[in-house]
Amino acid sequence: MGNGRYPDAYESYLYEFHATRDYFECHELLEEYWKAHPDDGFGDTWVGLIQLAVGSYHYRRGNRRGATKMLDQAKGRIDRSRLAELGIDGDQLHALIDGAIAGVERNEAFVDVNIPICDERLAERMKLDAANHGLAWGAPSGTDDALIHRHTLRDRSDVVAARAAALAAKRNERAH
Image (tube, rainbow, N blue to C red; front, top):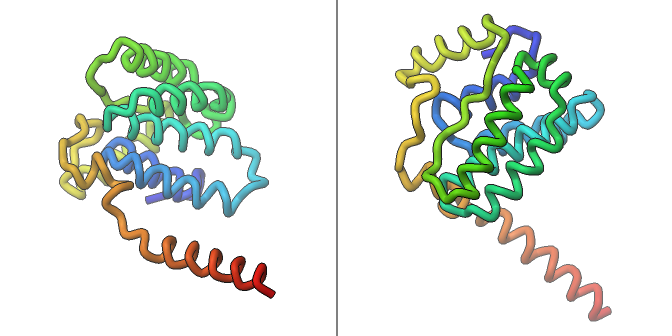
């Protein structure tokens, strides 16, 4: 993926968001990029898109409180003019986020958001890549537990070990 106009991580985010509907992966991809490029001028936009993915993840899992919070924060962070620079119709995306928030508040079943990509070359490249991988661009989310509950199923042993080591070091420091 990628043609040099947009960051690869951003294009990967769009691909995952629309082709696999792996919102957890979207969050991971864009967060890593955002942290590595804090001065690129798109910080709030990256965070807003991350929050859109996290809000979608929560909504699909039935966590309505988390979904409302993240979607509302995403809308507040996403600047329409910055989105235009990324090939996205910001007005339409804001309206779609409003619709998702309203759906959560009315206790409606989850419906995937399709980010309105107005850069036709980007959209066509993404759709072709999805088709080449046997995926339907913009298809509804599946019901696979590995996708829906991804954060609870991942291997966190390295994080747990690092936290235990930090706690042991702190206790050792206090003891001396």
